[in-house]
Structures are given as C-alpha cells and as structure tokens.
View 1 (cartoon, rainbow, N blue to C red):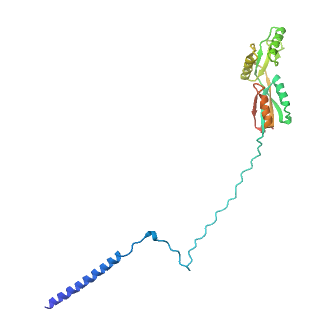
View 2: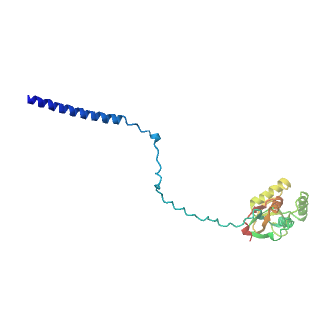
View 3: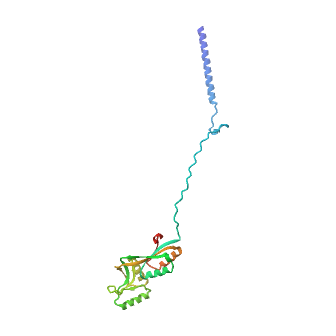
Length: 237
C-alpha cells in the first residue's frame, strides 16, 4: 500500500516537472516568433549626444606650393625680315644683275662673293673661217635678239668661235641651248667643256623686308638659270 502511494507521488512530481519545462519552451518560442523584423532601409547613424564633443580628426597638412617655372627667354624673331642669296652670274648676266640690284638701292644690305670652278661648260658657235663670216653670223644673232656674245680672238683651234654663255654645269648649259634653239632659232650653237677656271658671282642680300623680297623674286624671273634662295641670316654676318 505504501509502495503504491510513493509511486503515485513520484508520478505527480514528474508530471509537474514536465509541464513546467514544456511551458517555458513555449514561452521562449513565442517570444522569438513575436520579435519584430528589422527594416534595414530605416536604419540611420545617430549623431553624438549633446554635451559630448565628437572626436576631431587632425587637419591634413597643406600641400606645398610650387613656384611657377619660367620658360627660358627666346630671342626676338623678325618674321618680316629675310636673307637671300642669288646667283650664279658671270659675263653679261653679271652686269645686268648688278644693274637690276642697284635700282633697289639696298645699300649695306647687299654684298657679293665669288666662287671659282676648275672646269665649266660653254655654249658656242664653232669657229668661222674668216672675219667676214664672223660678222655675218653676228648680224644674224642680233637680228634674233641676241646681244650677249664674245668672239674668241686668240690664235689656236678656237679662233673666231663665238661664245654665247659660260655655265657651271652641263644641265645649265643645256637649258640655255634649248632656249636658243626654241626661242631664238639658233641652230648652229652647241655645248662644249672649258678646261679652264670659271669664276662666278653670288649676291648676298641681308635683312630684306617682304616688299623688297617680292620685288627681287620678280626680277629673278628675267635671269634664266639663276637661283634665288633663302639662307639663314647668321651666314651673312
């Protein structure tokens, strides 16, 4: 009888303990389920409470100020001034070019230098048989507008030959010969080599303004075979 009572008492204790433990689990589960969800879009960082100064970060050091680098001074340039060289001239063309330049009144802006070549070329009419033949040929040349010529007076194989021009290169001589044949109808002229020293003159023009340079370019067209070119002004000093 006593054993039965103890068994019933023990069962009640176990039942009561189970009920208490189960209720606690249910309450905890309910608390977890009823916790409101977080809304991330509504989360914001709050400012520090009044009365408590916020931490101050040290100010960044100012960047060093670099002094502007000055560009090196450039020499003054005169775009309206040029220097030129015109040549090469000899004989009658030298006299004509000198006269044309004199009309420009260049003063000390004009100088000249000479170049000597060991060999050159000439355009000539072969030697005539006598003086009468020479005079007849000269009359024909003048009738066709040719006044620049030279009759070789020296005894030898070239006596009574008529020189019409002396040139530094064969190309220049050929250009002149073509002009004689096409424009002046001189058929008897030909090109030969001159085994002698040939002196030519170059004109150097320093500090020309644009107007004078243009006038010089116009004059140059009257001198076939001459070359007018720009040169560094330093070379004229």
